[in-house]
Length: 290
Image 1 (cartoon, rainbow, N blue to C red):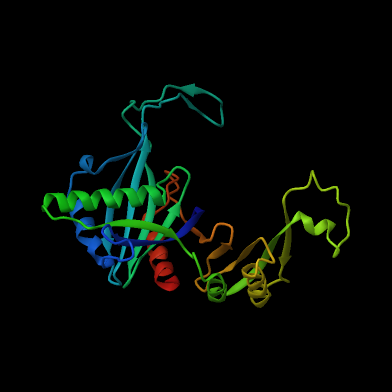
Image 2: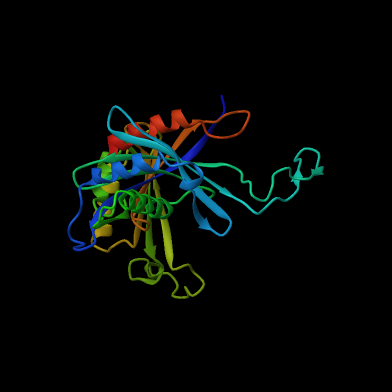
């Protein structure tokens, strides 16, 4: 069985009132728009990302646990270079037309809570970004409310997770295997180290990586480092380890959001990720982490 590693990003969606940004609409108010847009023809669901890239919500379904799992499809058109065989080096004309695209999949899971929607998103360079999804969902809401001639007084806003609570996210981890401190290069010439002051050619930030011993946990040390970062004694902190579900996690105060790295199955004939196993894993993670 072939497998590949996928990056999962954590985001929070809120339905912010247009009349008063301090107020929010109930998160489940989005669901009727999701249900409606899935009844529209595939062509009419298309939106443009750029002049040569498009995307659409291909499918989505609510699970028994109340999580909406689905797939965005995207593609790049107006581009058909010759095909080259990597084993022989031979070339042949590309059979696709300029209107056709290679089908790219971006998987997601939405969990609805009292004050926010948790979005777990497969992150790929050739896929759909959180900004693209936010735009698309706002467009879908506009279509649904327009068809029903209802005034919509809210819009969807996306935020990275965690924007706060870095220490809480560390404590949720099963094990911390390494922590990397980023400190100012001024430390080299400080009274503490008293190295040369000739640091013009040195990078602005220095990295100090602290690995754990084999199969040991340095979670408490990582928490102490996070407290030092909070007091601005450390410029930045990156923590790596595993979740209780067994997936790899990287927390980075520089990015202020969480990522999971998971292995998932690949179709050996097409090289495309198998959707159902990945979506089932994403459902478990989104329920566990929020």
